[in-house]
Image 1 (spheres, rainbow, N blue to C red):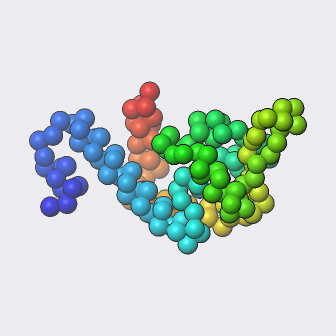
Image 2 (image 1 turned 135 degrees about the vertical axis):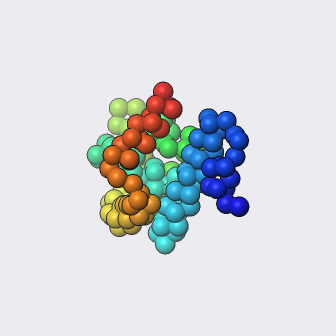
Length: 149
């Protein structure tokens, strides 16, 4: 029996059913997005860092800012940034005001890669949510936000 069917028919407390449903769905989404990113030789956490850096709109970010904005707080931000630098997708910037302060910014190559990846990930996300109405999506999103309060 599939896990989805087990969750529907089990006598688990509702809160546990919800927690398991969210975890199973999160893993499903991760698998689909990771599969879409594979041809670009980039992981989900690396993709997340690139999007954070792009969101800086040309201003560099320090490691703690990147860490705060990461979807997965378990990620080793320094290692992720080092890999992006090795790939030429990000670069270290020495702060003019404080030479000991190192910040990170996205390169032109990083921005170009995101331009290629964004429509692919958008399509994966659209495909996963095609059975939901806009109202369903808003409702689910609001409920998930309530859980995190």
